[in-house]
Length: 155
Image 1 (cartoon, rainbow, N blue to C red):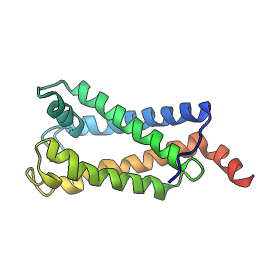
Image 2: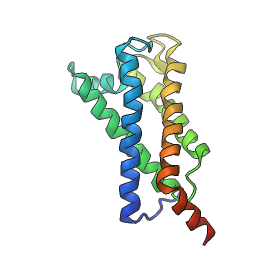
Image 3: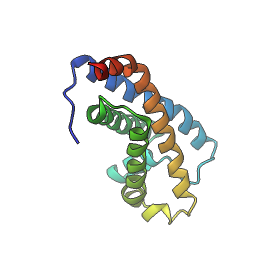
């Protein structure tokens, strides 16, 4: 994989796409957690922040961790695939991040490998926000880079 050289405007667009992606996903997942819908005991980003700092933290800290994480991976997606920001590439990134959540973050959070200390529902639970990430990221990249990406491909 090659990291594309991005112009300042592209970096700013990528950052904006990342922040907006994170905010959209937070607007979906935070109310879901507050309503008690997911099988997880708390939002994964909050659980990770609490494991990292060794103390109970407010939900806002988890949201900030989530925004930073999603923004970083969104910028990486643009940096890696600037010329080919396809849905399949966004889905591939989401699948990779889903696997990392199950194998790395869930154990750090104290939920066991694949979240199995909580239960088997954790596996599909974790897939849903990652699928939403792929859809939102790809859609926002199409909006931000769509015409410009087509112009680059034609030359």
